[in-house]
Length: 378
Image (cartoon, rainbow, N blue to C red; front, side, top):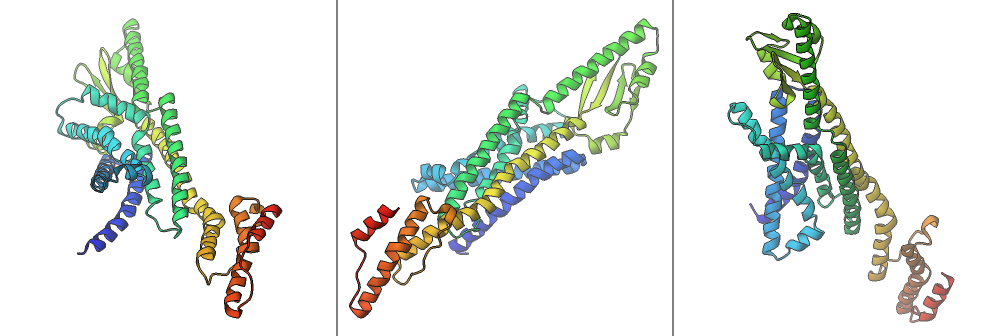
């Protein structure tokens, strides 16, 4: 297989993988929102790890090739290398790898979570770094999609769209960090709430000489968040069978709350559902500007700037290009359209006279007086 064919396959592969990555990013949040099974959510998470690994390898390969050509700085500054970087390695190192290790330990039921890893994941989750940085991959489509033939349109649309998406991403992460709404924060509040409830129940049972188990179950039986009660004497109350519990609950979907006489297993899936709803909204907030710039602004820029500049370039450089440029009244005072007006009123007539002069031996080329006259009128 020739190198050209391999390059073409690779160029077609990247946009497809980006789109699949974005779909996985959304479906991952949707799965948490509608409470899919743990198997489905685990598969989606592993797919996200694969995408993170793919884009990390892509960045490393591109960087090595650019460094070999002594163009690494140019790649980072002018070819969106910095976007390739922030949307790959940080997500892989700070989220995917630690969470994957925790998932393996949880499934193997061995070892404990490193405090450092837990702190890193807490911060990363709080500022929604995985969702935001994975969504930023959409701006990688600017430079590799062929929606417009104009290099100027692709460049300016990419620059403007990237600035819009990155600005939105920074605002979202700052907002998330300030408000602090995340799974760990919500879990801590819920744990405190049920710890206080257990203390109240234990005190009420002792002071009123009541059966603690009966009081506890009568109070908590209608609580839809409660999954299980384990009493210190070995007895327990369960709302779900072991098979149902393992089917719908991962280690991060519930919390354990311990008291003097019993411990509670409490669901936090409703908190994760609310978080997923906000994440889906954030996903569309990030994709909205990207799609708007890619489809709408690029078309506007092409019609009002690139096409005019292309017509001027053809008129100045090509001998047989003699078409006038349409001047829209609302843009006539802009610099590009003032140049286009000069082209229509001065340069093009002079060009046609020069052509006729060569054919008939008469006519006159453009003169500085004509340029000055046009400049005075402008």
